[in-house]
Image 1 (cartoon, rainbow, N blue to C red):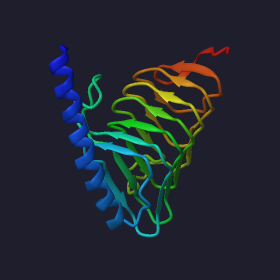
Image 2: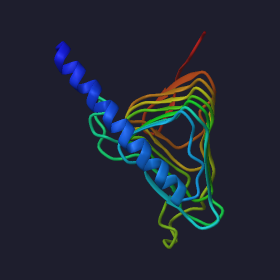
Image 3: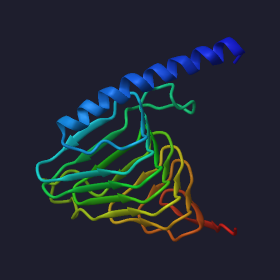
Image 4: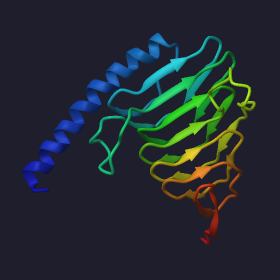
Length: 195
């Protein structure tokens, strides 16, 4: 990208950020969600909040929903949904999302500095609650400094330990310990991270 092209890209990104930060501020007021301080929205983040549910967002968050706001490619908008009475989504300080969908029927908690690569999905349910084959919803906990690669899916009942990296395209069905690189379908530990 030449200098002029880079400047045009930066101006466009700045304008998108300004417009959508204002739009999301209004949306958060409508849904009675405290607006996350020092946060940026590149494109519209979809919000659905069930009655008597809670979405709690810390500060310094980044939501990338605009297709070109992450150059690896985003194929959908970010989405935060609490889908049952009493459901909770909590997101810690400094987290980043690119086309990430978070759907909570019970509880999904992301601690500080979680990075969600493009098109990640985090859910605590099988979603088809009227189907007898669907199991019970179970909470999800993603600890601080976790990095989820592009197209990762985190399923119900999972805890991911701090500082772990989940490889691109993985489906996380069981707990992952701290300080590891894990990947695959189903996701398994590949190696420990030695600092």
